[in-house]
Amino acid sequence: MKNLLDETLNALERNGKTPDDILSIFTTDYMFSFETFAAAARNFYYDNGYGAQEVNSTLVIVGEDWWLSREEYDGSEWWRFNKKPALTNQKFVRKLNKIDLEEVLWFEEEEDEKE
Image 1 (cartoon, rainbow, N blue to C red):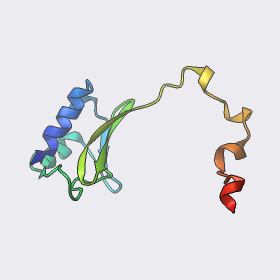
Image 2 (image 1 turned 45 degrees about the vertical axis):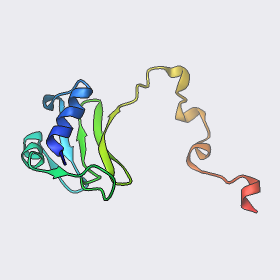
Image 3 (image 1 turned 180 degrees about the horizontal axis):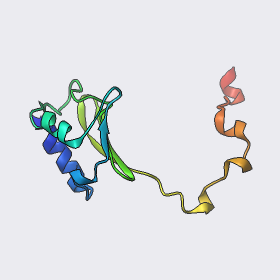
């Protein structure tokens, strides 16, 4: 059995973060502080092996330029650390006004796929 608070603290530590770095924690329906989350997660044990997912899949922990999101494969679940992408290298960033908006927004099937 895995403890959600321990798993969360370990995920933070592996990525050089602490609870003090957290700005908010939320799900689709609720937003709460780390203290509120910790009080509930401290007593939340789950089987993170294969089977049904047990931790709310919309649970997200947000920091300044990062976030933890829940990942799951066939019932096995874990925290995924995500970082805000750096957009400082303009060589690889195309400005929206320089491209055809339709090219960006619409998916067109290849002629062979339509038949």
